[in-house]
Image (tube, rainbow, N blue to C red; front, side, top):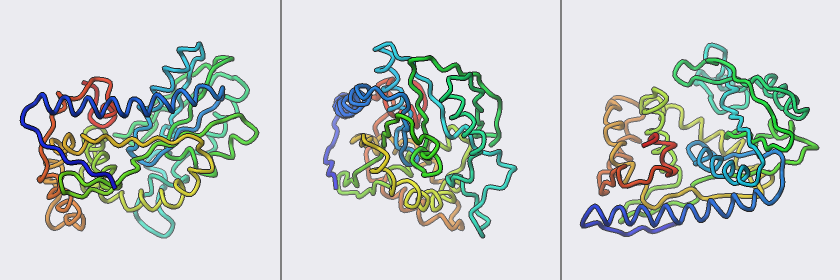
Length: 302
């Protein structure tokens, strides 16, 4: 449990608090990235549960590898989602399972991995989360001394990691690793990631709060089944992405999003619970956050 007790009397105090938190996270991130770079690995499997901060971590690792003259190619496993009009459901249930390995086109991914192993030019799909279809393909050239990052929650799934057998790879895992008591208000680590996802999906994936809450049960069940049991086995390096200021920041967005959940919805009680917690917090504006923050993943570039 992490305890955060802080109050603000002016905007400058909020900015100072945000900057301290950003510096602490940057220190953790730089340490992990430096250790990864020094392994000399040719493939990185970058994983973590939903809304854990994988993109920010990938960008830092890319920068560090390119600084030593090793070009990096990032392949998002999310781009291998099957189109929404193909069956993607939980066995025996009507609910859609977006996090099951069955949601991925494994044949296409296997071909991509094999071609990358041989240094061939890749035709990588690009998935559109609004239309839930493959929008187009991009051509990727693999440099002889390059590094390939396969990024996504699925990167530690056994069905994925076996594609890299007999290949020099390193696993990196990112997560929110702390439950938090903020000025006497308790947020579990799952509450924090759910709040990140509610805001991100609303802003960038056209998803209502109710739809995100509808998916959350399967998301968490899949994490317990397919991610957490393998993270220590596959991932040599692990990073805690919690930002001490983030719940104050999310407050400015999430209240309006949760207000859209109808009181007759089966998800209303969870929405109400989260909303009541956030209402007890002060608000930190996104203006207080630096342009290169982790939070550009969830709120967009400034």
